Image (cartoon, rainbow, N blue to C red; front, top):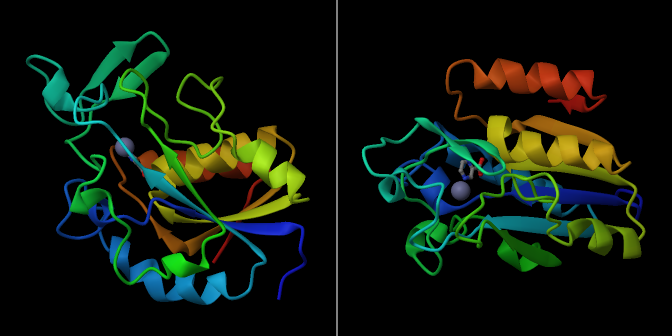
Length: 202
Ligand code: VGL
Ligand code: ZN
C-alpha cells in the first residue's frame, strides 16, 4: 500500500469517453485493468464524473451554426464546443462497467452548471469556482495526488495543473490515461505539465 497521504484521482472513466461513446477517446477503455489494480494500492480514492445538463453551454448543439470542436468566447475565456456528452442520468454518463466503482471513497461530479464547463477536478473553467475537492483532500491529510483517466489533454491535464497550484505533489501515470489529441493538444499538455513540475510516469 501507498502512504496514507497519497490519493488516486480517477478522471472521467465514463461510457461517453470510451469507444462507442459520444466523445470517444481512442482506446479509452484500454486503461481499465491498470486503474483497477491501482485502486488496490491507495488509501484515498476519488473518482470524477463529468455530469452535464442536456442544455450545457459546452455543447455545440446549444450554439446556433456551430459545430463540435469549434471554439467560442465565453465570459470565462475560450471554450471548445463538444458533441453532447455525459448528460446527467444517461448511460453515456455512467462509469464504464468494468471500472471498480465500489472502490471509490468519493465520487465528485463536475460540469453541472449550464453556463460553465469544468475540466478540472478542482476548479471550473473560470479557474475560480471551486468544486470542493481541495477541502476534501486537505481534511483527509492528502499531500500527493496521482492522476489517471480521460482525457490526458483535457480533464487530466487541467486537474493536474490545478493540483500543483494548490500545493500538491502531482504525478500523472500516462499509461493509465488516453488523450483526445486535437491539433497537437497532447504534446502541448505534456509540455505544460512538465513545465509545471508534474511528474509524468508510465
Ligand atoms: C472532457 C471534454 C469535455 C474530459 C470532458 O473528461 O477530458 N473533455 N468534457
Ligand atoms: Zn464534458
